[in-house]
Image (cartoon, rainbow, N blue to C red; front, side):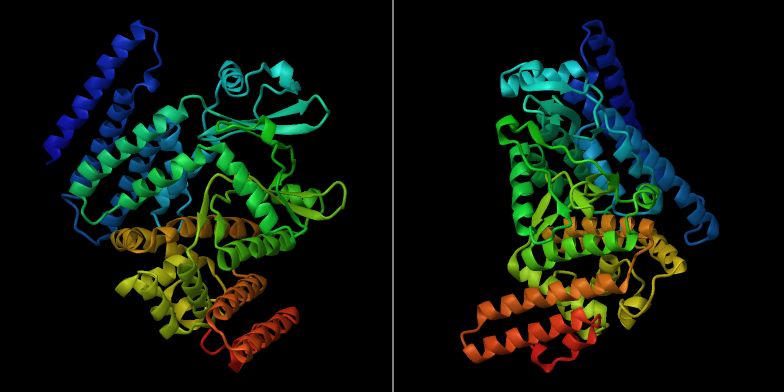
Length: 510
């Protein structure tokens, strides 16, 4: 088996080298060719697989030496994967960023290594940017803008953003897609699928990462359509318009296409930049509370969720006009729509987790597809230990030792976690990623598991369940009971207690 992997690696390397010699003489970009990108991916997959197959042959399983060696293999494999993502760029970086966000699902060696992809995205040249604008908008830069900064404000895996000024004086952010991403993405996903199906899944039957390819295949076309991103931005802006602290940049549709998105320019500091917040007098606890309000409402009430809240997409500022704190939500390409039954069961599960109602935790975890893995599912969902889950996560504070335990268990239970991710509904996968990203922000701000976050979650869960229940009953009396119960809960929320709504007998059956 190891011999075959070495042959595969050698073949891929030879193919890469010979193709490079031929193409270099013709002055073509190696990275444009699928055969080169596949060669890199195949060689990297083969080397990583060979390492895992041979590294532990002379080490006894479960010993201290075994776990130390396994950590080293994880680390060097993650570094090889990082090199592959940086070389192939585009979709590979996007998937690598996804993996880097799964703090409580993958070994720490992988997540910490791959996190750097958020700051190592490629940049397109100014000539390439002008070409995309010329092709899509049919005009030169000077015809569209008074000024257009050549240095991008930020570069990501699929696009980069430039600051510009329109002829009417308004300042805008122009998001331009990297020119080759569109043509390469579908082929790259096929390459990933082949590598996972024919090598990783074949050699390591415990590690079923097919969910990763399936998600990329489904979401990448949506993320590459910037008109879809603009529609998402407008939808969530209308949906959450009652939150005056939320700022969604306005879209300029006349200057937007599938590859270009022009929007109002909004400036602020990243949500994890505590120095910026301190300098501008921004209350960290209030930011964390408001971010929790937004996501609780998106997830539990509306079932329409912004699924990429990494710090670069969540800015904070003191609004120049109102002098009040604002959260600016950017990058609306990746959203998850939740089906009603899924959303209601998810609400009920979180209520059970907050209160420590273990029979309900099992019941709703099973409804969401976890089966006998429901204890692991509860721990993965909350990033808490089973002890904390059993006691009710709202009553047990998070400790550093518990956090270390959870991260260690991600490595120990990787096969079971992999099975769980393939078992739960696909709607759950992006929610897990979103949860991990939000937890990362809370950890940086030192506001994780605050009482206000549980109150906001519970309030939104109750609101969602009440709305669902009202839609199912015909009796006017029963509807009034539901309305009264919801009002009593809101009163309990206003005076800062969870018990009023929870203990109200009218909530039975919700």
